[in-house]
Image (tube, rainbow, N blue to C red; front, side, top):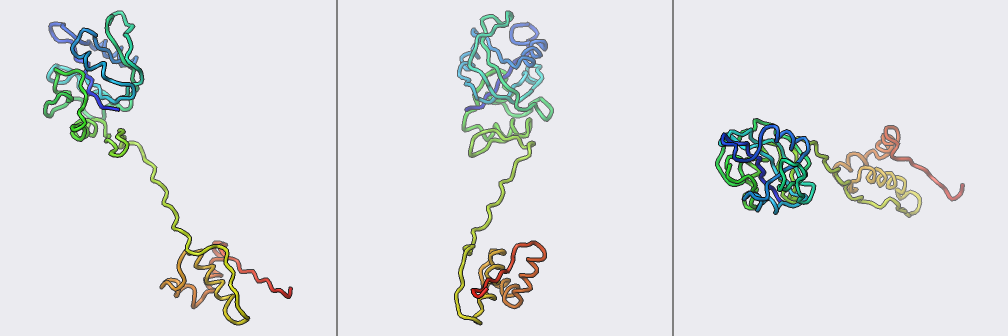
Length: 239
C-alpha cells in the first residue's frame, strides 16, 4: 500500500496536452484516472497498484488549474482505456474516500508529490516524506492522518469507538465455604465477604473498614434494597 499524487493537468493555451473541464467531469462521473501510454508519466503510472491511496489534483495555480479535489483508493488493476478520445491510453478505476474540506489551491513549497510541482503529474510519495505529506496534504485538505500502526489513513471527522474498559480481575472466588463452630462470626464474615465481592475490594481496605466491618448488615441491607446485588440465606442442618 502506498500514497500517490495524481494530477490531471488542465489543457494549456497551446492545447498541447491533458484535460478540459468537460474531461474532468467525465472522469469524475465515471471515477477514472487515465494516462496516455506515450507520455512520460505512464512510466510511473504503471507502478500504481490496486489498493493504493492517492489524492487527485486538477493542476494548481502554477498551471491555471483548480487544485486538490479528492482523496481516493485504487480499486482496479491497470486497464486499457475504452473511451475513443483516449485511444492508446490506460486507466485505473477508483473509489472516493473524501473530497477536500478546504480551499483547493496549494500554496506551499514545491516537491514532486505536491500540487505545486506541475512537472510530475504522477508521483509516489516517498516513505520518508509521509509525515510531510500528512502535514501538508492529508490534514489540511481532508482532515485525515496516517495511523502509525496500520499505516492506513484515518478520517478525523468520523466518530471513533472507544474500546470498553476491561473490568478489573475478581479478587475473591465467587464460591467459598466458611467453617467454624457457633459464635465464631461465620455470618458476619459471610456478609463481609459478600460485600467485598460486590465492591471487588480486599477485606481490610480503608473503605472496607468503614463500610463493612462496623455496619456490615447496613451495607448488606443497602445492597439488597437498592440494587438486589446481595441476599443472605441461612440453611440450618436441623431444618
